[in-house]
Amino acid sequence: QSALTQPASVSGSPGQSITISCTGTSSDVGGYNYVSWYQQHPGKAPKLMIYDVSKRPSGVSNRFSGSKSGNTASLTISGLQAEDEADYYCCSYAGSVVFGGGTKLTVL
Amino acid sequence: QVQLQESGPGLVKPSETLSLTCTVSGGSISSYYWSWIRQPPGKGLEWIGYIYYSGSTNYNPSLKSRVTISVDTSKNQFSLKLSSVTAADTAVYYCARLTTDYYYMDVWGKGTTVTVSS
Image (cartoon, rainbow over all chains, first blue to last red; front, side, top):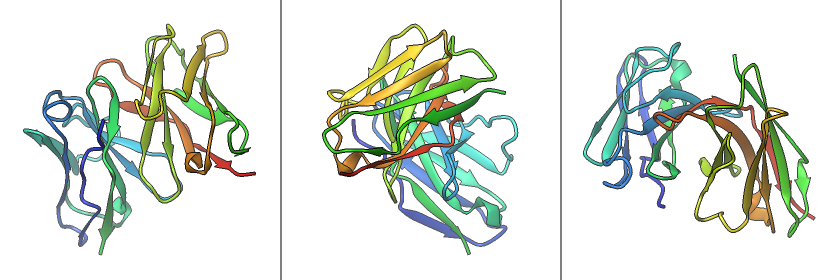
């Protein structure tokens, strides 16, 4: 069970859009729609932002969107805001749960 | 709404067993998976395992030999035991609810810090 691959960091200016990738294999990300994304601010618990590849829980801004192509899932944040600065983790399920290594988003 | 609260010792000696409990309030423990996740200082999230309310379990293969997760439906609690701990097990430990349809964690506890040190 290997961790999913995410870029260590991404950055963007307020109002811009950014995309965080999450690469797995055909056995996890590519094989199922069980991809979720979590936002974590320093010292806080993770918060669910996207599930089932592209669905948003109630209360999550529509600036957050998810997609998948082959073995790579993506989280896109449009209209970047200062409050979006956080760590983001992707997660997949394929018989067991596996997380990505996390991506630090910096809003410039 | 459902809330989760982790509890247990904040300090554990090397080679001993780490024991944590997660109390579920505002809802029933039935019909969901209940998961443990940890995060070493400055590092990413690591899934430890989960238990169904009926008692069936699934563990991270890398920790399987040392992990036991149990559930007490009468108390609306589930627990984690991690044996033979070392400094590498120092982390913030989170409990979370894992849905049974698309396997995502929609409710998280605030986390509890466990330090392994003599």
